[in-house]
Image 1 (tube, rainbow, N blue to C red):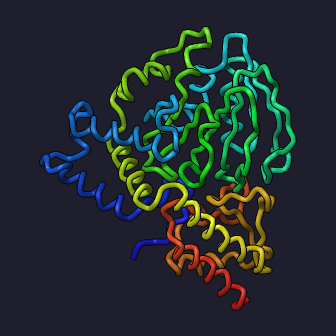
Image 2 (tube, helix red, strand yellow):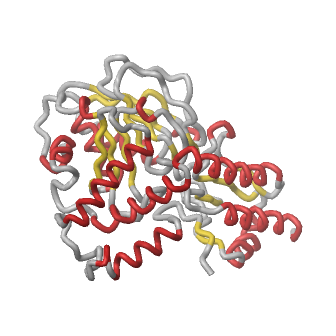
Image 3 (cartoon, rainbow, N blue to C red):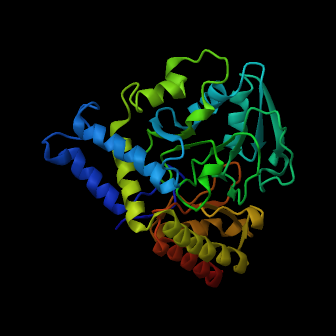
Length: 356
């Protein structure tokens, strides 16, 4: 029996993606070759890359709007430096919103390239909320934010209206909710949450944004070179991109982002309702900023931890312990996690209430 997988990433993917990926490892497209051994220049994989890039733009509603989708290496962590390399002008500056560990890491990298202004931060409150009411300097080259904070369980519910480029790290909630994605000039995301296995990184960038920094950019870090090479400047991560394509196809067949958004809202509502109702638990994030992807919560009585841990493990739940920065528990409810798994967790929480 498959576990109820609450891992924060790499995380659960749709069952049909596992099955199709497994078949492709044995025999891809009836070629009698594995997806793991085919040339990335073969017509079969070029077709995968082209469809994956096109499907990204289709699902985000960005077709024909001047955007390019790239599948790169290095995870979101490499994007922390690729973004300022490609967007921060020589003697320029950038504005950052500090909402968690990964936002903070992005800030550290940007400081290598020029003036990096932190317009607001929730660090002093252990990142338990999203800052509001901040001002972004009009002369910044771009504004950078992180849409969802995996560790601390917070999520931006709105984004500032600005007359400058907006860059967003959407690693842990991309494809999970409806947004006007055309308001963002550059989006990046590690694949290993809602899109595929670890090893590929998605970048969606408006082409007119590029080539304006006055910098000499190393080839592997230059978005324009990757666009020109159609995401094949060097050997791409063939298998993670193929699995990402399968996940994107699954999402499209489900009804796209609007359909999965309804499911995600229902899952989050079910769990947060129990956290708020059950006197044995309490949430760690500000209610108005709670993430639909990562619910973080604590036991009100730590002495119940051994009992609760025994119960949820016996119920087939995996990946529930919280990050050490927060403690307690973190239920990551990415797109592929079924409602059934959330109900199992809620049932265990209610069983604990009755047991103690």
